[in-house]
Length: 164
Image (cartoon, rainbow, N blue to C red):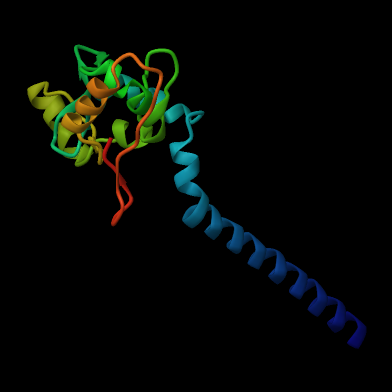
């Protein structure tokens, strides 16, 4: 009888240990890994959202538009100044377009916007991304460098913000 109780107790602890591992990994998946999985470019959900939502704008620190969607096409008003930073979405995503893809495709107040889309046929517009770069400073540096093969970085030392 004691042998059977000992075996039942061992099996109980084995199942308890397995259950604790399951709870731990499920919690890790939900709390730690979920953001990376949702924002992964291989996530098919992002491609489905792409067709129903107008991609958000990319703005500089003074609310100047660096990228926007016009009639289902992505437009870049300053391609020579910001192409290295903003990137593109035409042939694969790169730059900010890739890094903040999930934010640029996820609308705030999605339920309200979807209802307005059904009733008033208003487009569902996603979140915008605000950068710390400054258009005027970028233009000044771009004009100063001219056609020379060179580069410059302007930073705000107290905060670490990249300005140009």
